[in-house]
Amino acid sequence: MEAITYQDLKHLVSVPFIWMMVIPLVILDIFAEIYHHVCFSLYGIPLIERSKYIKVDRHKLEYLGPIDKINCAYCGYANGLLHYLTEIAAATEKYWCGIKHKPSADFIPPKHHADFIEYGDRRAFERRYASKPEHKVSARQPWSELLDKVLHGVRQALSIGN
Image 1 (cartoon, rainbow, N blue to C red):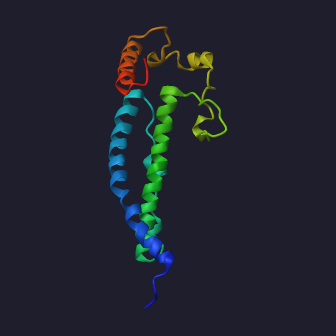
Image 2 (cartoon, one colour):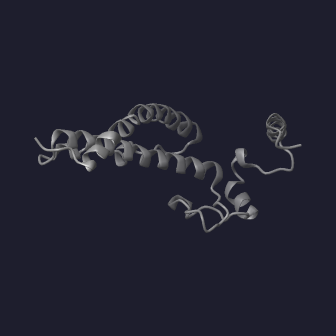
Image 3 (cartoon, helix red, strand yellow):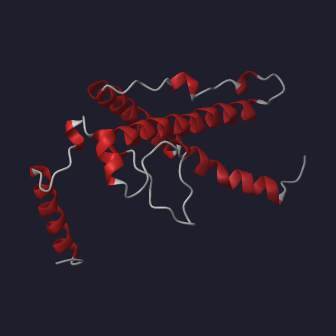
């Protein structure tokens, strides 16, 4: 019988932390899929093809042992799911607010921001989103007054503002 090495021990200790993410990932998957189908249908955004992002196939490799096959299936699902959800989030962001973040040295912009409007370019924003009623820009919209009241209440509750 071989002695357990420090490397083996580190791997054994990490297993519960890796696998405890299965439940939140599955729950996230279910809720995100509901969001994806309901909201994208309402907004007229084409659905993202799940099968292009989530691929579970490495468990079929003959040279992997049983534990490696299970781990590979988990990684294929987990990483694929996060890639898929990133695409859903990117399409949502493009629909609602295709504006780049303010440039800074400590931020790596997502690749999907490449065709977004430059930060602070109001004219480009108005040109791109003028035909969408949810993006109409006006001095005071009813929803903005409600938002101001909500934010004011939050600031007061947290004692961080007026």
